[in-house]
Length: 238
Image 1 (cartoon, helix red, strand yellow):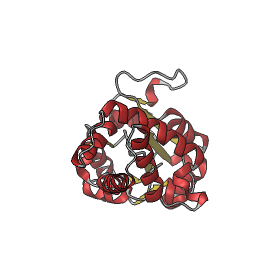
Image 2 (cartoon, helix red, strand yellow; image 1 turned 180 degrees about the horizontal axis):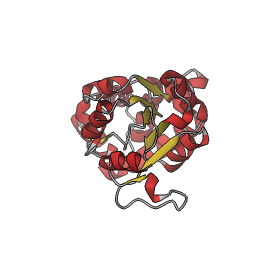
Image 3 (cartoon, rainbow, N blue to C red; image 1 turned 60 degrees about the vertical axis):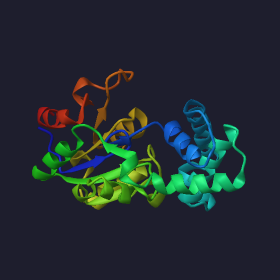
Image 4 (cartoon, helix red, strand yellow; image 1 turned 45 degrees about the horizontal axis):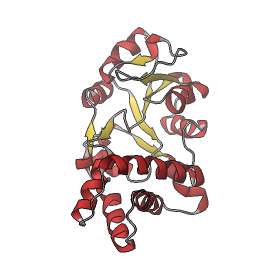
């Protein structure tokens, strides 16, 4: 059995996921303002706008002096512009509404097995924290989804100033947890930002790989979680 004392967790697509695709939520907001845009077009536009914004202003533009709110407002406006909507007044209203809307629980759902697994980890005495490439809305989202109480600390890339796979965000988690890396493990769904990055600083890590995802040959089977409910068995096996 692994001698673990601290477990750190990714959030998006590990503990929480969006209830509906971004394009569908954006299309519904547009419809509320009398604007008709196809969800599929908005989904494509969002991926383009998000990718460009992330490249030009990494980690929510923290180093360039942006707030994450402004960063996201710009992404939303550009998403609609790419889909043919150019009314600045409507764009501002939709962007502000969507920014605040994605802070509420009704846009997020807890992944199957997450509540039970987190409760089991707490009962077993593991200390737990979050390490996520998220903005400063995350703590409120976790509270609204009734998950916040499981964690001693919440580290977001916006607050810390470093985004995974930068090892410094994991090192800060280890300092907060007051454990050496060999007594800590990280759980996440991204091979590079979660699995590899945690191991690069000496931690253990487990990769959540849902059905249909590609397989990375470098990941031993005993490090792969088909569901979060498999975590107990893998820790005890390790």
